[in-house]
Length: 376
Image 1 (cartoon, rainbow, N blue to C red):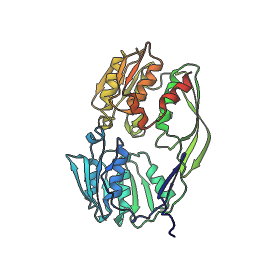
Image 2: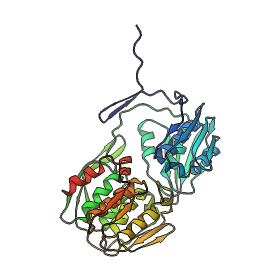
Image 3: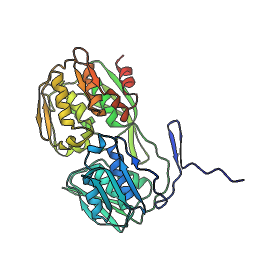
Image 4: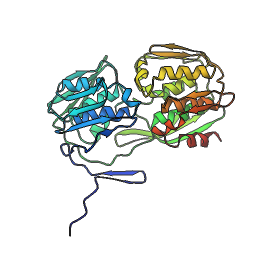
């Protein structure tokens, strides 16, 4: 009698158990890997697969297939990867090859690109160094350390160097995944904009490279209190408490180094800007043009539909204060646009309809139930 083969990935409720196969135990997929709508998946897995000894093709949905991939494929080629794209986009064909570690300087601050190259560095001969112009979210570096990789970080005045040794071995450990602060941001802004509101969000990730939203809210006169702060699986977590009532005039411009750390929150910050005495201007955020949709254009269009004055720039926009009016909003299939304007609809005059609202399920399943639970 033979023992039943162990399933490498098992799910039970909110727990996922993965049986590791080691750095060199992956095998070629039988079909192309469908990354769906996830740019993070497509870019990070490209780095992981670049140093394998087999061929893989990555595909995605219509939205993802329009997003640029050269930002990861070109530096991977500098490490020796064999990769071909479809006019710089998906589908991407990866022919695994031996990589050689080297120093790579990022032209644009991007946690996705950095993480892609660090994953590739695990399979490269020697050491791979990624130099980023400003610090971006560092979940990958923390996870590498948690699992035992040989990784060093050298901060400098005008750059940050992260080096990983290709000889690193990883050791399986339990990992606790906290609540996502980018998702929490929609509820926090809703609470901040609605007078006499009170909101508690337990067990939220408080990575220092992700909490720019808390700084923004504090500068708007809606401070968020952190309770029970602690560290879990190499990441800081805590409980957030936000009380409504925006006050003060301390914020009118968000730009520069903070932008990479609030990049996903900018659509909801635009909504927040309608409620600030001086409005809100976002600059240095050209990266928004190549997200799930052109988020700068989508935000501007949505605000105009809600009768809010807004000026559009190549790298951002300026939102003038005003009372949103109910409108029909096009989400363009973008989850963050849909959620941001759903929050705007809470304090708009009249009815707001979100076309393509189901996009919220991409990153926040049950978003509308959660929103309803805190406003009724």
